[in-house]
Amino acid sequence: MIWVSWRQHRSEAMACFGLLCALAVYAAVLGLSMRSSFGQNDLATCLVRSQGVGCPNSVAAFDNSFGSLVNIGFWAVLLLLPGLIGVVVGAPLLGREMELGTWRLAWSQTVPRTRWLAVKLAVVAGGLIVLGAAMTLLITWYRVPMDRLTGHFIHNAYDYEGFVFTAYILCAFGFAVLAGQLLRRSIPAMIAALVPWLAVRIFVEFALRPHFMAPLTLSQKCPCGIKGGNGMVDVPPATGHIGDLIVSSGGTGNAQLTFYQPASRFLEFQSIEAGIFVALTLAALGTAVWLLHRRAS
Image (spheres, rainbow, N blue to C red):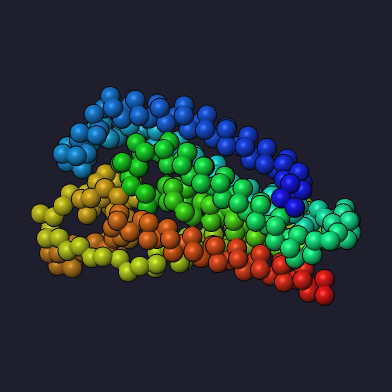
């Protein structure tokens, strides 16, 4: 069964490997360039001494050179990538069998239908996990210089530098497998899976993520508080510690209140969000297996 599953999905595997190689080339070229600029501007020493306060010109020069490409362009290009990978691999898994009629041969063998599907899901999902982990490592390595200035909580870093990137892929895969079984067509199943996946991702990112954990509060006496900005990429943020995410800020009399998520909570946030998408994946795949078992009985 494992060999058969590999034979059936080797074209998707080769395409994913090619995508990984292309990402590696891009990451190596731009990542090495960023590291060279980071060292030439002596930003590492400045960050250790003053959290970026003592070298605003160097920080601004580095951000002007790489900020738009790394923080905006790259994020925009990769916004749909996890979903596209998941639906392109997942939709044909059952949809193509139904569409071409090959299920008659596959299900007439001695292997039970549910076991047949379980093995295929395990093989393909395992490959997607390896792909997601490899892409996460590449993106994390590539973004190291920028992350030292902004931390991991900004959208483009958060979405691709932890557990959630792989969880996004698996969720889209699960939705696509279920859609392929219900619609019995590969292309319609891809569309039917991608739309709800994107809706769920946007809802989690903007409605649920800010409330995963209650923000901490920093009270500063004005105008003698910590000098910093309240934007997502200000160096340093209002807390004076790079990597903290400013949720909101406001004044009450002579005090300035800043509500923020500390940088140390990054992995906790990642675990919570990845858990949501893995749970959705298991629900979708479990439903697909149940429907197939019900059909078999």
